[in-house]
Length: 282
Image 1 (cartoon, rainbow, N blue to C red):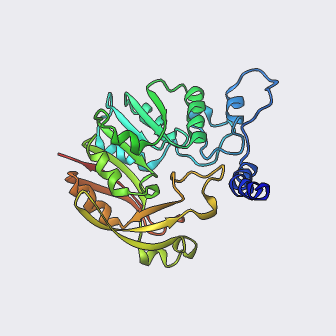
Image 2: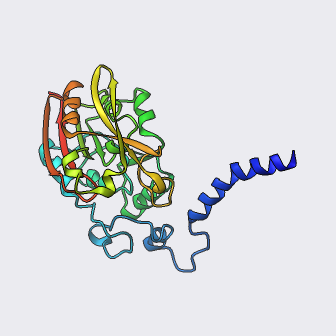
Image 3: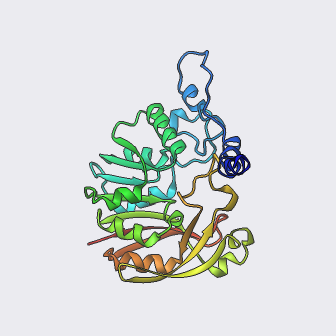
C-alpha cells in the first residue's frame, strides 16, 4: 500500500513540481528605492513584450511597439468617430491596445484577460500610464460572452481567434453583443505554410465542424512544450483550431456582419498567415 501511495504521489505531484520549477515567481524582495514606475515594471522584469509610449518610452519594458499599432490605427480610420463609444476588448495581453482605445476617446472600455500574469501586467500598466476609462477583468472572455452581457459599440479581438477551441462560436458570441468588430488573426493556408515547416508540423489534422448551422473546416494547432510556460500567451487549452481566411469571412457574414473590409494580409507572416479586418452590421 505504501509503495502504491508513493507511486500515486509521484504521478500526481511530479508534473506539478516540474511546472513550478520552470515557472519563475514574482519579485518577492522589497524595493530599496523610492517609488517609481520602473519599480512597478520590474516586478515582471524580463517578461514584458511591449515597449511603452511617448514620455514613458525610456522605461525598461519590452521591445515591441504595440502602442502605435498600425493595424488598430487603420481600424480606427475605418470605423470613424470613436469618442464615447463603448468597447469590449478580448485578450489585452499588456494593455497596449487598451491605451490606444482610451487615447481615441473610447469609454467605457471593458478589457478581459484570462492569463493571470498578463492580467497583473495590465494592472501595472494601468497605473503607470494613468488609464482611467478602462476596466480590466480577470477571467475567460468566452464564458463572459456566454453570460449574455450588455451590448457595446465595438469589440476588439486582436490575436485571439486562432487561440480558440471553437473560433466560430467566438464569432457567433461577438455577433450577439456588437454591430462592429475589429479582428486580427492568423489563419490556415496550406500553400503559404508549405515554406514554414516549424508551424506546419503543429497543425496536426483537419476537422469538419459545425456551429449554429455554419459548416466549416478547422485545423488543429498544438502548442506542445510551450503550453503553461511563464511567457506563454496562447489560449487556455493545450491546442487550438485555426480557420481558413475565406471561412472566417464567410462566418462573419453568416452571423450578420454584412460589411467586411480587410487589410494587412500577410501570408508570409513569420508566425503563420495573418490578416486584419473590420466587420460591421448595417
